[in-house]
Length: 449
Image 1: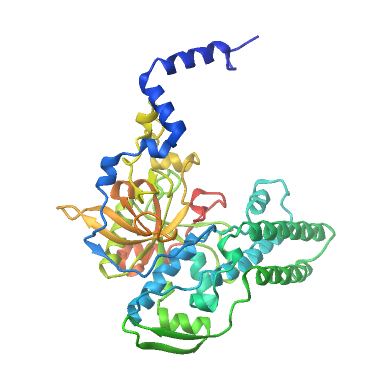
Image 2 (image 1 turned 180 degrees about the vertical axis):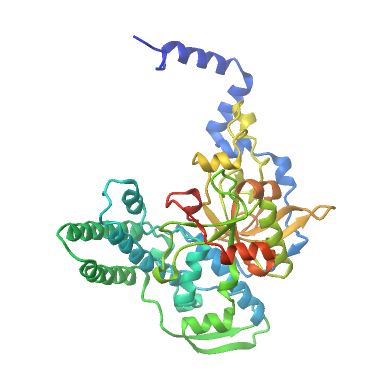
């Protein structure tokens, strides 16, 4: 029997012998089995270089906590918006409702899903496209353009106007049951199409499905308010805002942010995505009438330059990254040198795999959105360390904050959202006037934070 393609007893014996011949391997085994990889590979000298003081820094309110939900992109977006409310009215702290956009996102994603099912009714059910659509139709994740679409349509409300529920803080059961219902609806729509139903008839069928989606969401999250009363007091306990508001009016008056001024810059150095070009991702979005997403692909230094300009104007920056890479959660540090995994194992696990290759081979995509709120510089004015507001509560990291090194930014930050005034004239022209290149639905740039 040919044993060149199977694991033999001899192979196992040799691997065991070489392992136990190394004192370092034995020490590593004893340490990791007791404490885990991350704690053992932690480099204390890198932790010591972390700081809580920054050259440029915006001051935020109390930490927020997304609990057991995948709403980081919403929390990050709302944290950039609540900063404006806190600053405008001189508040000690303030929080916008995260359950409110969650409700509308689930509703809009459901409609987006059904529209895609109708549009692909002639595609094979087991083909790549329909299989992709069925994989995760209404997950918690999202992107800035999707949040912008929600706010433009539905506005925002203070947390008191739509507080958290058991299902908003832990979305797993709600998501699982809603996903099941959506897949069942997809089955019914495709069955009707096969029986000869017109698109008009399918959309009437969709309306019934969507009504039930609405009912499910109200049961889980409560019904979003159409109007609400507001009373805000500043740091000196002076009443600074009072009245009855609709969500749209509250956003316009209290937040006062021109959403159309904010654009998504990405950094993906793969061969199929030349820099200085604009991209979109097929079938990625939530609000049908708002369309999909739009990115300008730039080098990391260009993302940093725009982010620094916005921070210097005392405004935070939404960003998306692959958060778990070279990350010490207990210390709140994202640093390429903070975890010496390769020395621990004795061979390259981390090294030798560049950013483009990680994207191409499925090792890294955007997984989490947070907010940049500070930056330090070296003597030459180049950034060295970035302050990050996370949404994992005040007990995470350093009182809810993390830091990331500039070299980590190069490797694992994939997206920042900035006011387009911080772009060059050429970058603005490319973003605003050039037809974007459409990427496949499963492209890495379609990953949801």
